[in-house]
Image 1 (cartoon, rainbow, N blue to C red):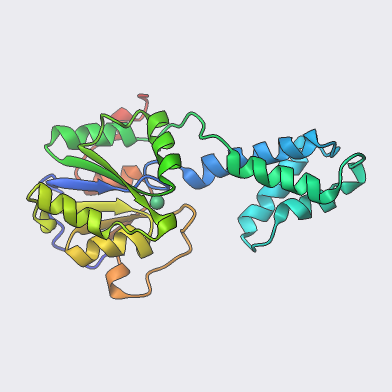
Image 2: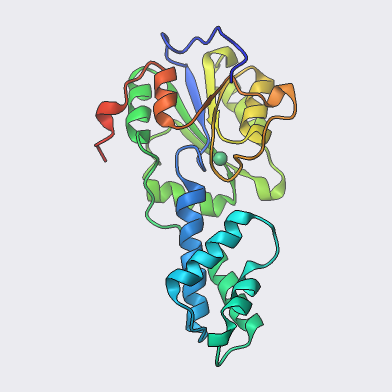
Length: 250
Ligand SMILES: [Mg+2]
């Protein structure tokens, strides 16, 4: 899906690339949610719930993936309650919920090809910016774990919990570095987020499909990205970069 055939970046590197983090450079939906569910399952079993660990995690995962809302820790406590001998169901569920939201950010590795792609872009002269939305404290921890601090020209934290958007950050970077938006590229997964914000400024946009917000499709013309790619390899191909040789590297 694309809206413009005059794509300029096959032959010339973008002056700047604005990367999103979650579900763009790292597998947030897969890697982080799964670990938080494991922490929740362990907390439930510590209360005395005699559930098989793997079965309990499977149960929680299926409820989380269904994304039907509700407190699936209560559902899990009820489902496995025959084995619950010394704890009330609400206590079990609360312990699980607390553990889920307190889950630490684990050692993270970016998606395949990420480091090689960033290196290649830097060598071709692109300025690289990381603009990430969420809880800034959590996002800082992820970036620390990834060792990304020296990889980007600048990293910006957008506190989406307080309603901030990426739009003013894009504008500030364009102004500060005297960048022409038509020489710049934004890569992200959220059409109602960085894709719309970047489109509104005339920045080229590539959407990474998949992730937590994969089901959210553009509902307005300014939410339609110039390209949709399945992974960073496809992005590299769009940028005239061969990533295959870098895939075996850490
Ligand atoms: Mg994202």
